[in-house]
Image (cartoon, rainbow, N blue to C red; front, top):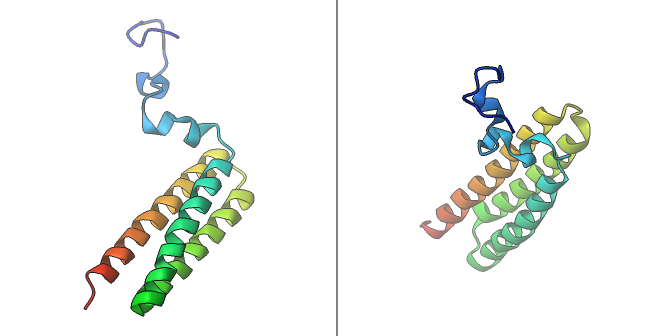
Length: 115
């Protein structure tokens, strides 16, 4: 590996730093299957919890959250196979995964703090 302070090295030091988020393997070399696997596990666990909240507390928002979770997982699977360019595919999968997780968190908090 080259020294970032070496004047002979014309690469941008930000591009060769492996510790930056944008240079992580899951966003640069993966095919996207790892994002689908992580999202499937999260959707199974969170979707089950949301369905339980809907059933026990009769909270329609929890049912909507479970359906939104399943829909986002389906969109992720479609993106995985429809988008050919690696970087845009991986960034989209990561964004959809975090949208799913943060959206589910917001729904659980809304149900818990409900009327």
